[in-house]
Length: 469
Image 1 (cartoon, one colour):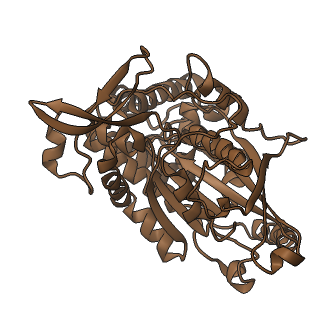
Image 2 (cartoon, helix red, strand yellow):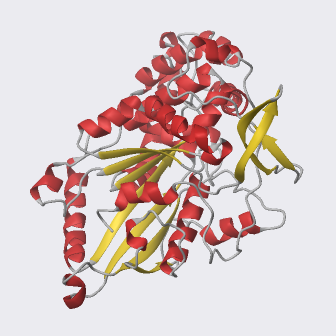
């Protein structure tokens, strides 16, 4: 995305004010939690907030985080004020997880934000002469489907149509998109700008996207609001679809191109600018196990989606950052890639899970490192739902996990099989794909006073924010 000069000036003015507050011990850190749909963003944020608040009250919920050794004096969420953006309701999500029976959060359908204030004791001599520091941590939640719109900002309607149609004509996409492709390919060069045609093509294309996401496990699906339109629901701005070159100069083609441009302007105002323009730190959550178990095409599709998204973001230390010694940050300084649901595999497989993620995100990881950003890779479970166990197959013991199934409330021991440390060879995909069960969350404190049991959340936060805290 080409930077807007006016926007850069506005950001610099805003950063100058924030730098003054930082010198006074009142800093602000924007943490972007990025992930494709069903990667676990909402659960991650809920666990993070509960664990930070509990750590601030003296509980050892985040032992690997540097500030928990007596320096974190308190943590509190900022109550709602007059913000136009919906508030991330961590309390409601925690209450649902702690209910009897518990419920995992529903699919996110809108942007929401929440800020947590951390009160920190200063180090050494400065702690004796200066007041305690306050770091405000801004958090964001949003539908994962919207994330895939980011690469579209660098494409016009023709470019997007060409790339999308080429993708639809091969691999797993070809069969479920066949009806849409037959409709689109049959449109004449004089196709009229009739909404009956536009809505028919839109409905067919959106139907394909739903099948690709829910039944095949694909993730590189655009535009995001076709799958998750948000509170506004369906609207004329969404009634477009990728169009073959032969019909693009038709009245219908010109109408679809105008709607495409209007859609991107609307997404920039509603989503791109308020969410992705000014991250300081970034967590990229990836459901590696889900992609692995969905098959080779879904696995490679996830890698392609993450690389495309990464190419649109600003990493590393930009000019303002270098000139001001970090006081005016203008890029993402640190990024942590995290394979979620690490509790679904036994401990002996978690290093492989992290290594597999590192290989999966090789392109975005190299891009961030090349720009000067600090990069780390982790295997985490925002809420640990299982315990270590042993399964027996043909008289042989194998590491496994054991947990309570969400569907029936019964305990089950699950052997998820081999987790490769790198992209699997061809022989791996010849085996039947494994369907991972959905486990119940453990019994949680309704108010989160004891925090949330997790795997690796503290290590991830330390790698991401130890310099700022």
